[in-house]
Image (tube, rainbow, N blue to C red; front, side, top):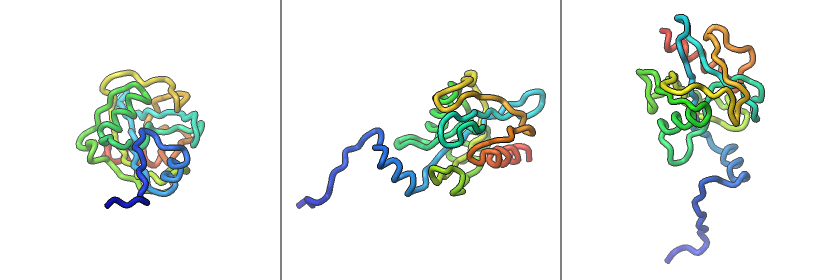
Length: 168
């Protein structure tokens, strides 16, 4: 005989704001960051976006975001690149979707949540990065040795870790 006190909660694509905030404050959130790179004049450059939404408004950041329910890591990476910038990106070998260059679990990387951050070095395979989007006011290439002074989410540290791994 089934228990009558057990509530059945219907599945929904999006959670209510209250439930979302409760989850975000209560559990670590898996996220994927794309450190988008290119070589120009034999020097490495990094593509960053200037955020126009909370948190870190006005700060330069790498593209990234949470892994959505029902998504593989590869799908998350592709979604972030396509939806944010309109580009297709492969991960630089020997890394792949299930083997990020680095996992960051610092609780202070994001003021909204405790991200479990998977960091991927990628290059652009096709498309041209959007100059702006819903979450950012501009995108810009920076020489790896001249990153902007003000960066959000501790992305300076993340970019430096990726660059060090690639140049060793």
